[in-house]
Length: 293
Image 1 (cartoon, rainbow, N blue to C red):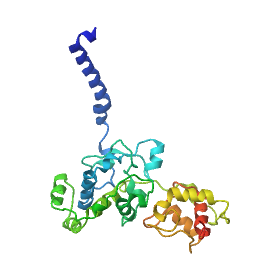
Image 2 (tube, rainbow, N blue to C red):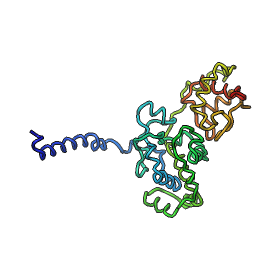
Image 3 (cartoon, one colour):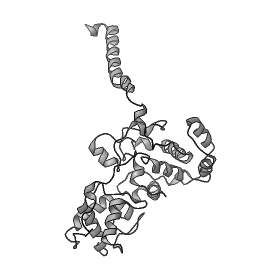
Image 4 (cartoon, rainbow, N blue to C red):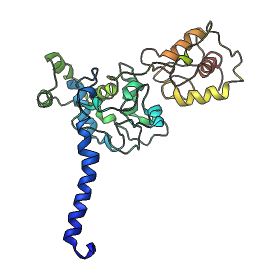
């Protein structure tokens, strides 16, 4: 009996484990991480982004936030932000990778796609006071990152990682804060990959005429959509926050539809997540809800 001969039992157990490891972990490398997995648009980190990544790891952000969008349709819809599931080519310059497995907070692999503001206003406000943009968040404040960035080893890091840089890149880091660095890193995540375009169903048909002329009939759903997708930047009561107030607008219905569908400036596109009717309901809320509480 094997249980009476521990040496043979250990040897056989080791062989079984090695067979499983070979089949699932070693052999697949013959077909992955090859030229076909490269993504042309993925670029190395700049000195400022790399400093931000180091701060991200220093503060333990990866303990609560993963950076890998799984192939599940629900995960792609929730964390893809217009992109698809994560591919190995996205992480070619990550040393170490920060895939993680815990999602105490949302996955951040493509967070740069969700908030494309070139100034990083949302990220900055969120880091300084998370509850100001996500009231239910249990994330602590990182306002202390508004301190000078130590650039002593910046060039040495870039050389060690063999990332290209210029003197201008190094000069850009000087005078920056740790907050500037981590915001630069967050803004890059996911932005190098191709993203899907808005579905044809979200493109308005006909002459861009709003089918809703009465807010009362669509108010409940419009408020629910606003709370889910817009309140984080425009305020819970549409009073404005990072983005402008949405209590009334001088823009035409067609202009508002186009902005919501296609995005504008630092605002992401919602054309791939909201159908045409939902966008029109949002337009109606913005146009007719000026004095609505």
